[in-house]
Image (cartoon, rainbow, N blue to C red; front, side):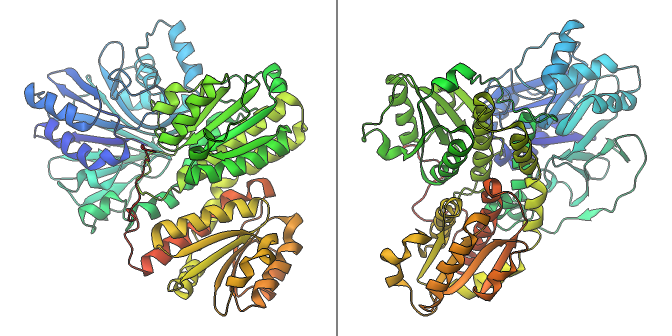
Length: 608
């Protein structure tokens, strides 16, 4: 996720762009840059690091001009560096582009452009856009932009300036957020409302497939095919702090609602229309996979819970034994690692100290290390043999949500790639699983659109002293993450139990009114879980069940049922965790907790 700001008016653009980027730095903070048009020339300043690096440079050597675009980056393609920073220019320096999103077919376009003589200086997918604009430019910038949009695939929000068109900014949106700010004798574009609130509270919110031609005294809105449209002006009533959260009261809630897009961004560039999985530049050859005797998945906290689900999928699809270990225990347990071992380390930040130590030990012992992380250029990504990035964007709340679900999706892709190379499942099975994965974003939208029963449940249980989660198989793995979310942000004692183990101790803790959250999403274990629910009900428990739509029999046993859309068991975990995330959020909200910054916890654990 990256931040975009653009300005056109009568004032000096540089300070306005810096002000906007300060409000967007939470969206990306590994580099920042601006491109400003002055007297027919575009000047670009961009630097690796926090926004302050750029700001100091402009203070020392001011850049003049009353139109420009700015960007703060969260790296996806290419490590954080000056050259990979945005904006990106055409070879003739007449065009500058800022971009939020992912161009899925950028490698194909890049190769075509290189054959035509275009030179590339960055590793980014964005640079192809500036060169495509130059390639198609015929004197009509609007017609040029339409041709480029028809050429590129993926998600994008674009801000474009052209030296031959000094009176206009162009904004284009597909999936990634983009707004147009309406001023007096000045106008703005931005990826989020906070960037413009210092100057205006009137905005147009662009929808996917829309674009804007922005001049200092006019704004023209249209579809990306050029068809004119009209939109209502949105009057912003939030304060600055709330606006930075996109209107959500907490970053955690915002990030829960960002999961459909995060999963789409992580999944779609790696899955072709014919069902082929492409793990970026990672080459897991048939020979290597057949020679792999065991796999370790090593992680901490929420990432560890994602690893448990990765184990289920790899063992089921690829038929390779998997051991999941907590990173802080791994290097003290004398793990069975050699050159025939694949170690998968999972970390949101890529800086988790225990996971980094496990990575180094694994490499010392000759294992190949594959990292799954959300941060380009992090220590774990640099030191691993292979990296598969989750493109969840910055996750600000301490309690992880979208990082977890994208880690599950990434692990599913690894499992399918191994299964394909081993011929351990049929092509029909692989296609069926991929089809189910592709439907996850829309099915998550369904879950997120129906939160009233979750709020009601939170109202019923928020004052409890203890809350228990039960499940079997995959549901038990998910219940552990649900329990962790609750204790992290609400401070309620919570425990996840394998439902078949209730008789071996935990039933002693169930008494009248004790909340029990029962996950019942696997068809093959449905009847077993109904029996476990009756066990705790007989001891007085208040049971909240998470079940697939259509399994209405469970309503006879549970006090409340929260339904998720039907899907195959293997990917149900991505749907079933979302009601648990929301339940934790609303319970913590009722208790008045500091949800985004829970006591004693940090976002990135960089010490042992």
